[in-house]
Length: 64
View 1 (tube, rainbow, N blue to C red):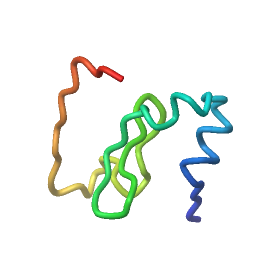
View 2: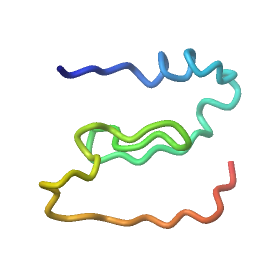
View 3: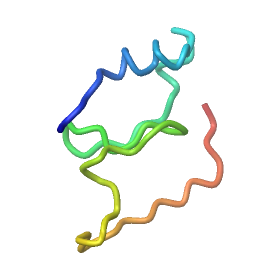
């Protein structure tokens, strides 16, 4: 089954203060959220045995 939450709901659940919410890095594809930094990757974009292409992003330092 498919499950989704709004970014706002995720940030509230994680108890992120409003003042830092707009500083949390996101990876998006069009209007889809692919990854929320230090939290989760979308089920749609997880690597599986049927994955054909992989994009590797190396983020060694993030400045918020």
